[in-house]
Every structure is written in C-alpha cells, then in structure tokens.
Image (cartoon, rainbow, N blue to C red; front, side, top):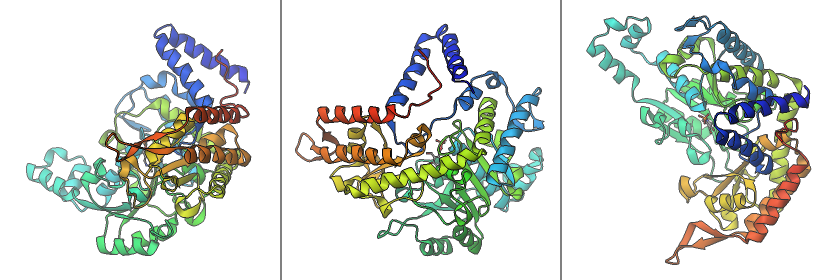
Length: 478
Ligand code: PLP
C-alpha cells in the first residue's frame, strides 16, 4: 500500500466535506492532530487502520437491510449480504466460533441481543413459543400478560462494577439492572483476584439464569473453564462479554481456559477496543442460540449499519493475519512493562500487576482521588480514565483508581522501553499533584494543585516520546 494513496484518500475526502461544511472538515483534521499528540492510555480505545476507516465512509451507509443474510425485509441487499457474510465468516474463523452475528451497533447492543437470545431460549413461556412461530395474531391479552410476567425478573449473576464488571452486566444505571434480578460476585479483598469458590457459592445460592463473565477493568486472566463448570452446576447459561480483551483472544494470547469462545454458550464483544476495528459490536454463539441471535434486528436493534459491517470485515481480515498475533503479544508485554515501571517507582496497583492489556493504579497511594489524578494527567498530555477500585470508598464518580491500557500505544509501535518512560511521566505527575480543599476547608475530591510548568514539561516529554512513533504515518493532510 503506497503511503501516497492513504494521504490522497483522506485529503480528497476532507476536500469534499469542506465544500459543504468546512467546520466539520476542520474538526476531523483537528481530531487527527489531537490523537497524534496525546499519549493515549485509555484501555478501551485504539487506532483502526486506514482501510477500516475508509470502508466506513461510503454509500453502504445509505442502505436499509433489516433481517439477516438472504432473509431481508428490504429488496436490493445483495451487496450488504456480501459484506455481512464476509464479516461473519472472518469472525467465525478468527475465533473458532460456530456462529457469528455482526450487526450490533455497539457492545451494549450486542449484550442486549444476547440477553434476548438467552431469555427466548431458556424461559419456559407458552405465549412466547406461540409468538416465536409467528402466531402473534393468535395471542390473547392474557397471553401477552403471561409473556411479560414470564420473561421479567429473571436472574443474572455478573462481576461487580467496582471489581471491574460492566454496567450492562445487570447494574441499575443500565436497562439490564432493571430487567434482571441481579447479584454480583466480587474479588478477594486481599489479592484483588476472582475467588472462584465464592462465585460458585453465589451461583448455588442465587441460581441465575445467566452467569456473566468478562470485565472492563480487571487486570488479570479469567478462567472461563471454571466459570462454565459453575454455570453448568446450577443450570445457568454462560455468557462472556469479551469487549475489552477480544484482541487478545484473536491474537491467541488468551488460549485454553482463558479463551471464552470454547467455554461460553454465548460471547459478546465490541470491535473497536483491543480488536482494533470500527466502533461496533458482535455476538458469537453456539448453534442452539444462533436462530434467536439472528433475530437481533429488528427484535432489539435498529437497521444494520452496512458500512460498519464492511469495516468489520476489513478489520477482522486484518486480525486473521499473523502480524496481529504479534501485536496482541506486544500489547501484553507493554502492559506488563508499564506495570513494572510503576511498581518500581512505588505505585500501588490493583492485583499487583497485570496479565492482560490494562493496569489499574490505586491512586489513593498518592493521596488523590481518581478524578483528581485523571485531570492532572490530562493537564500533562496523558489521557487516561478514572475507574473504581474494589470496595472503592470514593464511589463510581470520583473513584480511587486510574485505568490505563496499552492497545493504542502498541498500535503506534511503542515498546517496553517507552512504557518505562511512560511510567516515569505518570509517576512524576501523580507525585507532584496535591489534593485541594473546598471553600469551607474540607478536603475536595475534585480540586487539586499541579504546577503548570511541570504539567507543560511532562506534556512536552510525552510529545517527544510519541514523535518517535507517528500515528498514521501514511497520512499527510497538509
Ligand atoms: N462491555 C464491556 C465489557 C465494555 O467495557 C463496554 C464499553 O466500555 C461495553 C460492553 C459497551 O460497549 P459500547 O460502548 O460499544 O456500547
């Protein structure tokens, strides 16, 4: 691929946009500059390839294609069929899955599709059975009432939010916490690790319909074989949300007991985090759930986004190349180097380290809340996000943690030596930041002081570090 082709493609695209609304063209250009200049350590972000980005910017966006391949509610979907089938084939091959559904617009949507599929498959409801075989008109008011009663209030057991679980795993601010009766498993307070005996105990007591594995902020491997055994022992469906670590599964860093696909009945993911694709979601499942999963649109989702499915096909094809396995391994090497660099300098890390793509710093060790640390780092050109730590005394808004991840910097080509320098920058900022006070003298969870000169100096050092590994080296918009 000539670098010139990438520059020409993006320059031309901006020229066309500029002719209609120059401010949008300017914002797109400015976003590239910002991304190039910031040390992006947000664990859930990445940089998709130019091919993936370009696959999204075209007339596929104009097509309606409700339904699935070969079974559409709209005419003229032959080209959408091609890209959807390709994306699904790449997904099945990449992950060794029996079935792949590539329509979900996001990770949350993928989870909703999975919840529906499990409810429809598992809940004994004569009214639902009737509705499934398209006898909807034969259902009486009493049938509908029974259907809602039978589907409602089912049980879900997932990882608690402060231990690293996601909102969609049954928590109140998300619809999953309103539609399911939820209970959660946490981590061992001494080690920060999942205690599988406690999970088994919770499952035995609670008898969930769905046991959810997967996380947004747990820095260790999860043994999915054990979780499946626990699910089986109580007759639960085992669902794994691998949104964060799908790239590590694709790159065969997480294999055997740590690869969810052979163990779970149903697996959901995003495509834009460590998998490095377009923003979107996906569901992989065992054959018995495939029919329900394929009803995702229009059951749960709006019309599919064919342009994004085209980009998913491109990104999944990229993830099937041998160099993706090397990328995945480097993500973990970098996360471990970053963790070691921080530990050596005295930082406190949840679980004492990492064996995946993310590191969770407990910033109470620096006398800060997550919010203060996040802002101070941002002032210094380091983009992270605050996150709860297990049993967090500061709650989900202020938090006591900073989550950092290496998928994005690894895509840029930074290696373990640069991770040590990154650890130095983070540690410098956090040791030089002091918590502030409210007007009445009480400690503030948001205010902080950091010498602006020091913040500028660190920001310049971060820029110098990044200059050695330019982002999108093939794209010159000038
Ligand atoms: N599941 C997990 C584990 C996540 O971490 C996230 C996002 O952070 C999601 C689901 C939701 O993904 P999306 O933002 O694409 O809806």
